[in-house]
Length: 377
Figure (cartoon, rainbow, N blue to C red):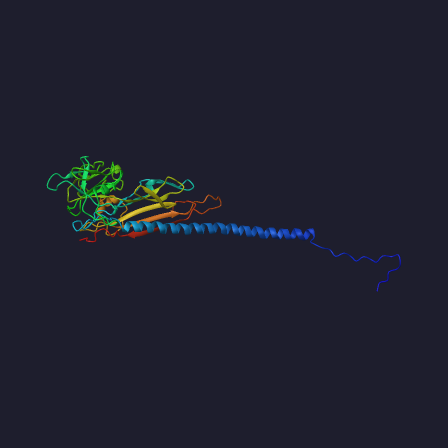
């Protein structure tokens, strides 16, 4: 026991130190900074990897959706054009414009590489407006046939058909209202000539109107060239611009048909050079089907009733089968897409297709249009 003398204070105990020393704090901060830097470096690397994987996943989904839409359209090619037993097979279900440039159609020295319209094919799916009844020319087949080169309006008679939606007969005025300026119409012969039913197309320059005498629907259109051929401005889906002469005619009568077309066209728009888009156009409405498309090719397998034209190889040059789309029996569509081009200077990957700073993927489908004839003998 410690004895404290009078007038003396008890000795103080040494105070216990609290907190960290400056050295300890410095060491802890250094360790924290090292760990944080490592964590942020790993996070940064994994963030870029995640972004790349998401881009590839989105690209694969885009390819799948685009090809599915094309398949739905092409399998129905020629819909609405079979009018009865007198026309057992439609001559044209698709038309293909192959682009085979003789020189490079893209610029690979830019970032990203830029593509021009000549790099891509065009696919047209021929379909008829199922909600518009077919017309028949009022001209007697025993007299003067209607001539599509004459530049005179056609008067088409309305057949006694039933409107499936209302159960009522179509009136002349109702049918006339279905035809609008800019429509592409199809003239189709009801008599086979050689191995096909002759046809031609035209563009309406005025809306359909009723005609008193003879009674019917009056259609005014740009006249065709001799024999039923057309130039590109009068045939945007290229049914008649390069078709063999035997497939076409410019003379029609009461046994023939006049149909309103609703064709579907697939092209690649390069309006935005940083994002080429596969677009689908129908009835004047254009919708983007897929972004970042850098390849769109369409091939055809053909048949000519007696010979295999291409032995069922897919031909990517329509002139090889003389642009005779009546011979097409199967279509092969290939799309190449890319992820969004990278602008990161640290992104060093360059793909082997066009040396662009992005990943690429490609996919193809083969479609047999079910409305084309199967009687290949």
